[in-house]
Image 1: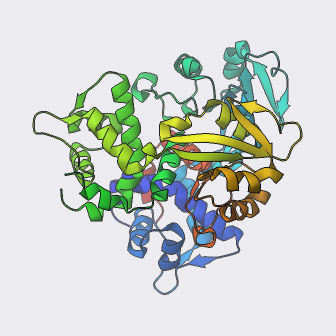
Image 2: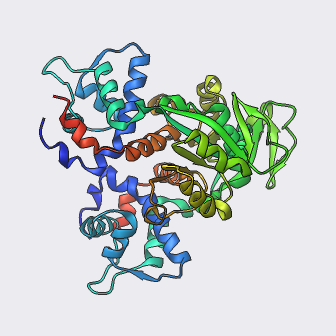
Length: 220
Length: 220
């Protein structure tokens, strides 16, 4: 297996989608899949699939296809989702509650262990077994439990201060729903932003009646 | 401007990120930017930036850079976000409320005009001026108001039926938070899924202490 050092960022960004698609196939009881079928599922070309999978040690065999289960295990290892990271959630408003109640953290190998808020109305309550602590307990809690990930659902104007406080308390990665861009080189840990607007814009783009590239041609 | 017909899907997928970055620059009062500076902001190479922007008519000038405002206007046109699409939201649980209360639809050129739910506790209430109707009023409402986009926040087991009902009522695009994959060829309209898990997985990947590609080399 060659070229593994040269895996491009574009391939890395596609890994979660490969993982998701393969998990769906496994759920449907499908054990093997050809690059052609996988290409159809993922809206890529078969040769792109073959190239991507070879980058991370794809187990395809001519005329036989890929083993869905083996690819899933390999992707879990590469993505680090089999690592059982522990997460705390900051800000138990509507979005925080939606995540605690409905999001399948375990799918990503992550376990939520606590939530924090300042509002008396929510501190002390539980969501699917996750207890909401008062924010002032954060330092003591982090020292004792050493969580890995912080899920940041606080208002925009509090996001950066909170992120810095979390990093000071040993948090190693931030899943950022706060709609504020954070400089990773200032914080010193990876920050993954969730930008709802990107997907709504892509939808609007795809809903355009006219071929957008015809329009582009009119620019000049 | 050549090659506009050959704009790759990868470029199209980057358009919202270009738009977001340029809007942030404009907010900071920055009027021009070089491909090198923009590359730093977006974690791409300068030559990739120049190539991408040339695909959609970038206005760069040697030694002068790009006009931020002009690029924003162009991107709005290409993305179709200047089109004032009208959206209804289905399912006013925690996630639906979070979107109605906090998400900036106007940033994407979308205007939410109504929400629908079945729960008596929420029907009749308002969120930032958006009224929650009983679901049984959906048909009559759609015939009268002709909304373009449906924001789907219903539980997974109700998602597909609801999507088909919406398309029957003239909805032209679905922004899907239901965590259920929908076949666009069955529905006949674009569906844009929001997969929280993709970004959490990418975070886990980036938090791995060891170089993942060293590990990949051990596979064989």
